[in-house]
Image 1 (tube, rainbow over the protein chains, first blue to last red):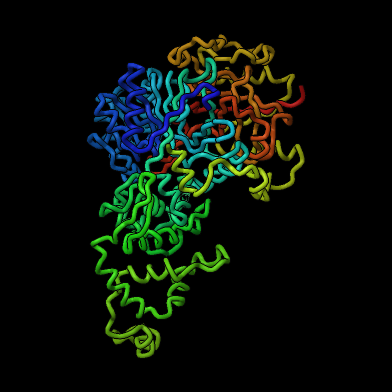
Image 2 (image 1 turned 90 degrees about the vertical axis):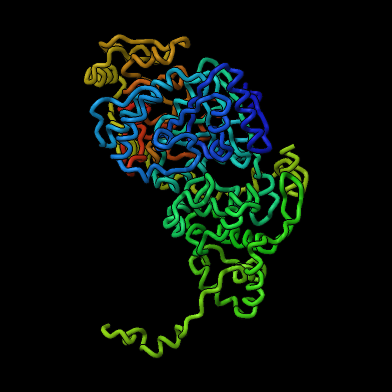
Length: 418
Length: 210
Ligand code: SF4
């Protein structure tokens, strides 16, 4: 990529990445950037960092635009625009667009077509004058130095081709070795993500191209906990994630709790295993994330890159409860068992006795995923920790078995009727 | 420093094993199903249309008249053309042609209502056309800003079955744009709306026999 005219920057953590991007924007003399949705820049809180430096970042995805216009800034909380109905979006556009740039047209209705048209006009003005674009990337190809952005609205193409300077912030795990590897991912991602054969637009670029697109291209390679995650032999599989969101869509916990509950830009099952690894389990929310699951295994079933999310969850639970060796900022440290979980550790010892036949438990728990791979799950170890760290359910007055026998399978449960 | 961490995390010296090319099991399908050349072109037409591109089929002799008609239907003030578009294609077009020059600003491009280009390759299984910035396709921005894009695909030469076959033909060093139907969003109540930022009308002309 350097050979093709790009400049590479390495950022060990969020602060460093933010400093690099802020400096790069400052060097252009601009105070505005257009952004295409990127998890990496959300992860590091780039918009807020730019804001502090007096640089305004305009989000250009429709959903992100709705969030940015609708929320009082700073809007770093992930508010899925799916929770805004069309009436609310109309009101937000009518009220806010004028303050940010081109106002919404008079007589704006709440039909999605009209709203999209309003967004088109509002953002076009920004695209045409933008001098700096900020993006992430879905993939990077090592052998060719190529970056890939997969999208559907066209705002990505705008941000990638119209500005004079393009800055891409990309997690180091996004790299694939060869150009040919894209043949797998370009087919897999749209199918798992939106069930399309192909997303409307995919852009690839290698450095800069004379007269076509940005004259300056900067790639900020972000670690921010990724190498620490890589050091964990069980947990590292989380780095395979291609952010298709299939696991969110099938997750019963996500469905109930919603995206905010995960306290991170990565919601859902993948968030529950990625955030505690990227950030460590020191904070309460990060220590609790591995518990945000019923271990039903649906996420593993749908994951196109076969990340065994339940396995990692159990592994992380074990680490939260029992402590152990982890890598933080490249250094091996030994975690103490989490304080709040002392009671659970006591329960664990009890449970070790109570669940004298964990195989039975496992069979029930992992029924859904059991057939995916034929090698047996390791139970001694993570499995034991699983049984150990769960809250034990209250023991009912009567066991199910007894209840069944007494009522003839519920036909006669004392309430009458069938 | 980060690479050092990667190396330590993996517990050994860095660098991909020299055997990467043979380590990966490429036992998956290179394409999905057996098709004749005609069937492949038909599939392309079908899949493009399913994603709301408007597909036309013609031959080299009729192409200029078809382009004239397609453009006349929408009355763009001017039509953008990349530098290497074959002259004869546009011979019958009435609207004034604007040749994209490296200096035209985005705002100037915004005044053109339509653009006509060739393509690098078209993928039948996914209904995708790929542009690679060759002289008959021009800079990426000219197919992005106008609201109406007409893309001419030479069949069957430029048509492949699948994504793997397309990647083989493409040069990673060139900036590529893969287009599968007009832009779209489902961000408002999951209602699909076509045409957010890119051209809202995408017409693909499959032209045979040159
Ligand atoms: S973990 Fe798997 S299913 Fe979930 S977003 Fe990542 S790739 Fe998709």
